[in-house]
Image (tube, rainbow, N blue to C red; front, side, top):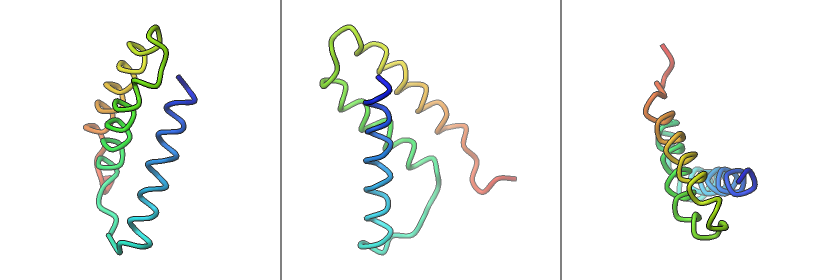
Length: 75
């Protein structure tokens, strides 16, 4: 589980870096990055063993919950 979530986070950061460097997109908010991580992790659920899929779904829900709590810029 840790490998999947770590890989998803690294891949999402890499894609964000590419968007910033090559697509000239500006940084928006952290919430978007966390939602992208959650969406990608959800799509990677099929790569996990059956017994680990519910745990990954719980972690995806946790990431989505944390994304909604992010306030940017911090007050």
